[in-house]
Image (cartoon, helix red, strand yellow):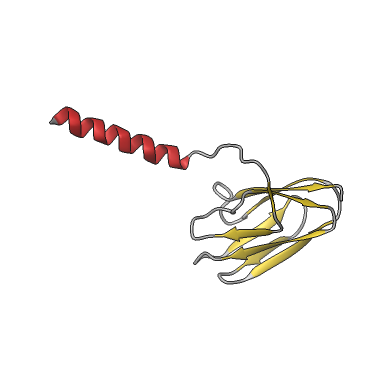
Length: 112
């Protein structure tokens, strides 16, 4: 019985730790990023064409922000959105300045 309980506990531990791992995600072709109640950007990596306006919407219960590299920090309260135009091709990393450990993302801008 002890082995069965220990085995079950190890399986559950594997499932829980597996959920927390982040693999390198393929870019999602979208101009919308959700901030769900989970301290993350969803999707974390997006791809757009140059000239696209990307909108982040805070559906969490806490205030977050979007800071793209050297651009100003945009604070987003619950229920609010912020939009940023990406005119130049390249890869743009961004973070939530309130939750830098957990909330990171990338916008990949391709030629039109």
